[in-house]
Length: 102
Image 1 (cartoon, rainbow, N blue to C red):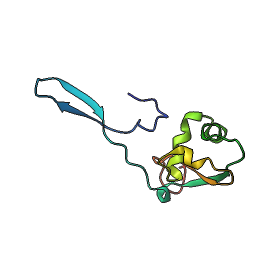
Image 2 (cartoon, helix red, strand yellow; image 1 turned 90 degrees about the vertical axis):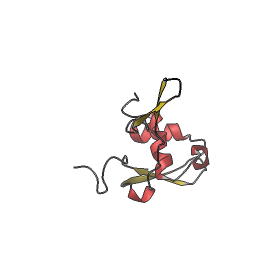
Image 3 (cartoon, rainbow, N blue to C red; image 1 turned 180 degrees about the horizontal axis):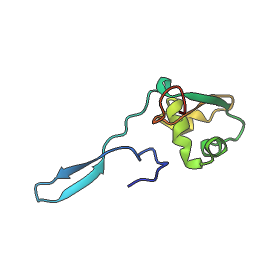
Image 4 (cartoon, helix red, strand yellow; image 1 turned 180 degrees about the vertical axis):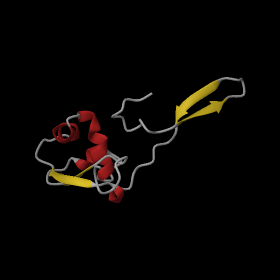
């Protein structure tokens, strides 16, 4: 349903049975990971004029991975992270266990 790099890729779907017999398939709620449980790779200090998608592209090679930085920095609004001088946590994906790669 979602691409392999989507934050919703591993979220299970559910089915709602409506009274008229129709079925609605939806994605269950995504729970944010606890940043402390994510393996930190590095930090990035936000520079003048940087955007989160640019930082994600530089770090992960994919601008759409900005959500990983937001999750690691406990931000519900990614725009809150773009403050010059703020240190952003760069972590492994939540699906990779603490301690890193095998």
